[in-house]
Each structure stands twice: as C-alpha cells, then as structure tokens.
Image 1 (cartoon, one colour):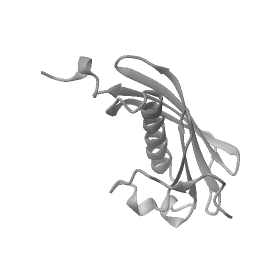
Image 2 (cartoon, rainbow, N blue to C red; image 1 turned 180 degrees about the vertical axis):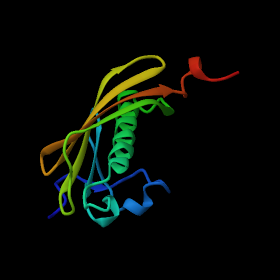
Image 3 (spheres, helix red, strand yellow; image 1 turned 180 degrees about the horizontal axis):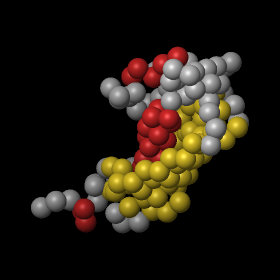
Image 4 (tube, one colour; image 1 turned 90 degrees about the vertical axis):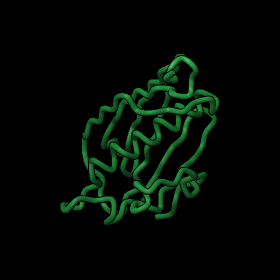
Length: 140
C-alpha cells in the first residue's frame, strides 16, 4: 500500500512515539490528520492494532488540531480523554486518525477523533485540552 496523497513524515517527534515510526501527518486548514501503515510495532499479540496506540495517537492528533484552531497561541495539556473501541485494525491496513475541533474557549478546547482502518471505523475518541499557555491558567 502506498501512503495516501498529502501525508508526509509526522512533524512532531516524541520519544514515546519513536518506536511506532513511521508516522505520517497532513496539516489541513482546520485540523491535523495522522496515519500509520499498521505493522508489528503497532499491534498486540493477537495481531490487532493496540488500543493504547490508538488512544495515544488520537490524543496527539486532537491536541494538534486544537493547536491549529487556536492559531498556534496555545500550550495544551490533556485534561480528559475517552476512547471507544468499535472494531480492530490489522497489520497492513492504513490507520487514519481524523480529528476535528468541536469548540474552543479561553482555557479549554474540545475535540473528537474518528479512527479508521482502510476506511472502516474502528474507534472514536473525545478529548478536552487545557490551554496552559493562556494568561488565565498560568500559576502565579
């Protein structure tokens, strides 16, 4: 399988996600999308894409999408994350994390994410992110 058009090596590297490389991302006007071509490093002992990886990358892409919505004037941390596992992804499938921002406020950003394996929905996630970069939330 080839990587879908518009996806490039992910711009946000992390020691946590290094073992899962290559990760791919696409920056859109209103959000960020992440994608992986599932391989052994992404899977549990049954050959399914691991739920912990799904939750982690959903958290990542929702936070980055909030950052885009806030016009890069934010330092975000996750305050709540919910993930529902509806089906499973398998080795060789393109796993897409497609986030969208539901609402932004002075101190909080709310986002959702749909996770698909070859266009079949396998999971969904919701996150709330605190804008620790705003003046109202800085500790004195």
